Length: 169
Image (tube, rainbow, N blue to C red; front, side, top):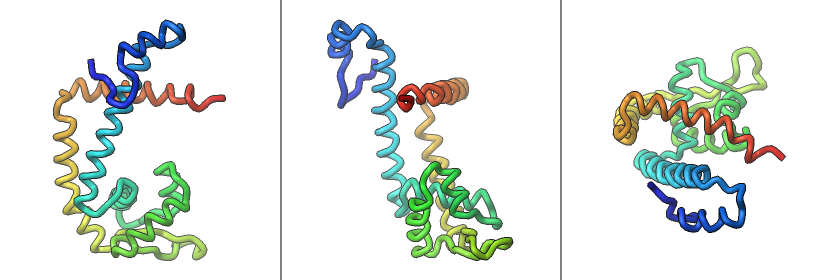
């Protein structure tokens, strides 16, 4: 059994369960293990993106533009796809534009709007980065076989469906 480094271990949870009968030890342990693993994955990704002088946010925008091809995306589309505010997107775009990886241009049907596109430098940068990124992603997931990966995706979907329990009032 994997235990969290920062949060209560099995013995502590067992003691808490004596006082709080609604505490389901296996649910809490699963959640704590998930949180610890998520933190480690996030640290690994931060280190990986730092090699390229990127953050996860900047990478997300670059890959969205790379997939969108030449048509580009509006700041609103980025915000909606990324689940963040337009202000956050503006800050990320400012940094990417300063590095000449993206450029803002007038939206074809409405000059009050902007479209963001990759520059040639940005397209070349992401094209060179992706092979390493995909190899490292494959290596990170290599301890799971194909069936386990499919099950993992299904389990994460179920977990995502339960997140409203933490949000609901």
